[in-house]
View 1 (spheres, rainbow, N blue to C red):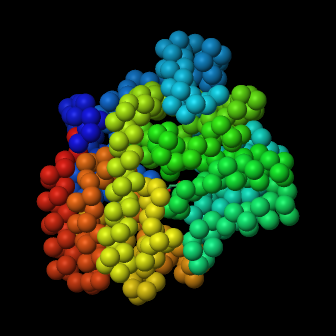
View 2 (cartoon, protein in one colour; view 1 turned 30 degrees about the vertical axis):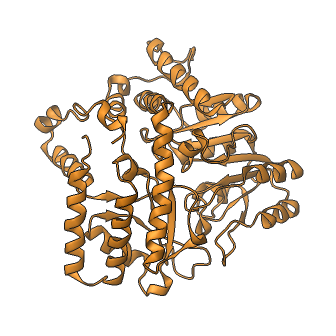
Length: 425
Ligand code: DSN
């Protein structure tokens, strides 16, 4: 257990009033707390917030409207909200070494949208990693605003290796002359070469947007190359590796501060969610402590160990391993689909998501792979020894996908492990 878990183990959730006033919602939240206690969370974009973050999230700051920015609000009574947002902003700038921070985006997609809005005109050409190869909807995918209102060109991963082809990125950039290149990932287990992205962007006169939602903690702790000094804007959600509340923030060069701030408010949003800003400030405070770096290091070690364990059971890992907090398993050779694996593992209280793999011939709804990651289980305290158990449980379930007895056995063993590593809610 790291100090986040021991810092405050009581009062994380005060639900007494809720239990009295609305037993139905209380029961659902109570049951969800138990579900989280009894299962292992392997979705790489999820994590567990500390009791302190949860306290700030459930505070009276939710009552306040505060359109505008600190020192320039449209409603009265915002002196303390200003204080909270200024603290959050300074902590974000200090943790990432950024010139400017905007703490108000409601989540990752609005954060990316605000950067598009601030730096581009509708119809401009953008270039991002294709969704099936590990990019995000907001990186130019056709069903998203970014693919509809912008001329989106998509680069991809090499279908043989699963690794982003930077020569293809350079060629496409020279051919299409994008106004902005997006370097970011939601399902890609290797490091992003931000230096090369920056060189390419500079060569063709494009802005560079780095979306570090998944890898924020690794960047903050020096465990992944840092885009902050070289990108025009850097976006991230706050609830993934950073262990904050559901929300997002944008870092940028000072030169873009005004345009991006306007992109958030008044262009896309009204009043910021002040309780979220406060909880983000707490998470940033926690992330600035030395134990956060040990945590992030363990996240990577656990992901590598898990990948090796799954490989030793004959499962194919996209790109042959991982450099970060996540891995993609290509299940094609097993005859089991991603969705089948997700459903069966869910029954064993191992939560992950079906995911497309590079070159996937199947649909996004029932693709050929699964995506899993170690941020949440590492917060819970699991280390290498438990990764071996986990790899064997996952392989057992995939090999015996229709065997109720196997699912029941694994579920029991998972429950035993979870009891040894309880959450603090
Ligand atoms: N839904 C997030 C993820 O799981 O990666 C991305 O937005």
